[in-house]
Length: 137
Image (cartoon, rainbow, N blue to C red):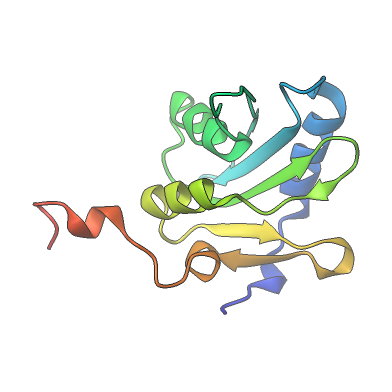
């Protein structure tokens, strides 16, 4: 596992935590995410829970970033409401993050064990969608 502990983006954690504290309401919005774009911008978003499988906060932040012209994300974190702290991405989000940003750092862990790891460490031996497309080299 390639841990990048010296690269924990505490400003990113606080941005997601602030959104979770101030905007998450009820069962529909329980998670917030923040992502840092390569140009330094921070983009935030929250999940949209629905019994049909609404999008997680990490997936919404990808779309929000693209809507703002931030197509290269370098780090992402999700934080739960009710002061749950940093929450690791689910399997679907891990796969999507890998497919969109194969070098992205993901902040995981709790308390003094918060650290940044590469998405490939969270999804070892993974299926890389782009590698299986007809134009893949």
